[in-house]
Image 1 (tube, rainbow, N blue to C red):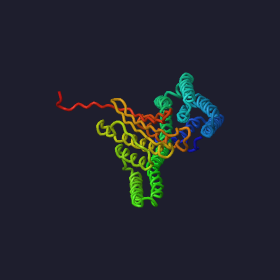
Image 2: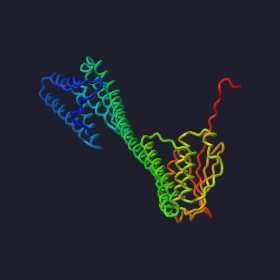
Image 3: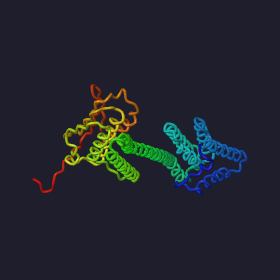
Length: 379
């Protein structure tokens, strides 16, 4: 519902002064005759017209079209009785503010038809009344044709701009949520492994204290180093400058598996990111997924052997993590890590496959985008 002051247009070729003229001008046409009946009828019609015009702005749904129809009828009567056609500009202005496409075109067509019909009929009934103002009538007809489309397009544009602003706000909210989820995944993957390693090494140091104090001291030194590394990675994560290298994650996987007394077997070349020149964001995703997979093996599998296989071809990069533990069905609390791995891989069009038989196998796949570059001067 529009406000009452919306009857005056903003930023259009019709200013507030023109509307004042259009409000006062009909009285000139009415008072050209001194007949009390004509003056009473003309004044009454004007009052009814502006009442209808006011309520057309206040009404909702179908009542709007009823009040606009009253305006069109009053405009026809004023045209035929007094030769005053300029109320049609008011009606044209309001029709341009109708948001419904069907309603707009129906009222727009009816308004043009009855306005032109009333003018033509007036020329036949009393040509002397219309002929002196034929230039102004022509301008009015042009306004009746063009003004509604101008206002309709402006209203449609404003509506689209509002929708665009809403969409921008929604996108900002989604980006904020996504960033929070990304930080949560990074914290889970980064701190989860380090804290697991600290826990394992703490248990090992406790067992070694009565047997071998020197080895226990080395384990405590490793715990301190691991804690320092975790703190550094958290700081880098907060500063958003950390880029995970796959070779570094292989080294960390070796450390945490050794601390958990799990044998690590590596097949393939873990340095393939350097050879294949894959993007840093893809290497980061592969490194974080490898970290999470190894962390799950340490925390949940109760395995004795963990095998990591690196494969790469022209079309695909894959990392296979396999353990001989108790299987996924008997593990607990691995859902968050696997969900985070899948979400990370989705960003690089990758996939995660889990297979269980006598061993549990996680297969991480990322497609390779090949770009051919031709050097200048090369034949």
